[in-house]
Image (cartoon, rainbow, N blue to C red; front, side):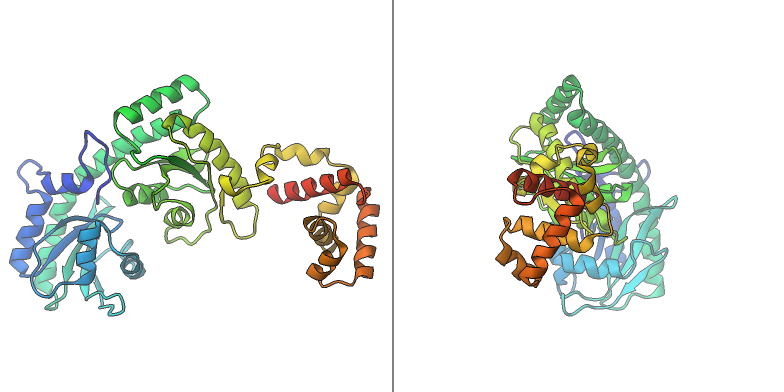
Length: 395
C-alpha cells in the first residue's frame, strides 16, 4: 500500500508526508508511530493508489501484503483488486476486511482519511488481535490529524498538476516556439528520465483517471494531461503505464471501455509531438471496433496511410460503392472484404466464408452491379479495399 509522485523542487508525496509538520502539529510518521504504540499493533498510511506514505515498525507475524507493499512501494495487484472490491474508495466509515488466504492477506481495518469531503488516503490497522471500539476511536482521531497533513500536500500536488498540464499542452501543441520552451523546461527539471519515450492518447478523460495515472507513476516518470477532451500520457517505453495497463488505470472502477492509441518511440522529448500525432492516428484504429482496444503505430500497416485521410474522404467514393457500404448489404460487404483480404482467391474466400463457389460468384456479380465496379481490375479492387477500411475507421 504506497506513494511518490511529485517533481524536483518538491519531494515525493511520501517523503513530504513523512516530514511535513504543520504549525503546532505532528508529521505523518509521528502520527503513525504514536498510534502504533498506543494500540500495540502495526499501523500504515497509504495514498489513494495504495502506495505507502508512512508505516510503523512491525509487531507480531509479518503480513505478506504489507511487506510486499513496503518493499515494492505499492500493493500487489491481487491485493489492490481485493481491497478496492470492498468499497474503500467510497466508504464513509471504517471498513473491516476479512483475511484473504489465497493472496495471502490477513484481516485488516481501513479508516478513510478525509478532509472537507476530499478523500486523501487510507489508514490501516492489522486485526491481530481484533480491533475494538476504543482502537477505532483512536484510529479515527489519528486519521483526522493525518488529513490535515495530507491536505497541504494534496494542495501542492494540485498546483504541480496544473503546471504539468500547461507543459504538456505546450509540448504537443502547434506552436513550435512554445513546444521548444516546454521541452527545455522538462529537460532542465529532469522529467521523463527513461528514454526512449512514447505518447499515448485515450478515448476518454476524467480527473480521477488522470490522478490515478499520476499516482501510479514514480516521481516525474510520467507526464499526464488532457488535450481536446482526450487523456494524454508521455512515459518511457519501459514504463508499465502503457497499452492495456494504461487503459485499465484510466477506466478505474467505472467499467467503461477505454480505447488507447500509442505513437512511435522517440529518443528526444522535442520529438514528442510526432509521437502524439501518430498516437492520434492509432486511436482512430483502436476505436473502430465494437470493443475498443489498443492500437500501436509501429504495428499499423496500411492504416498508417488511411488514418492520414480526412473523415470526409468517403464522400469522394463513387456513389454505388458508398450505397453498398452504407447499410443493408452486410452479407455482401463481408463477402467483398473477405475476397479482397484473400487477394481475390476464390478457393480460399469460399473456404473462409463456408460458401460454395457458385454462391460466391453470384455474390461477387451482385457487388459489381450495386457498386459499379469491375473486380477483375486491380484499380477497382484497391478502391473497394480502401473504402471498406475507411468506412470501418469512420464507424
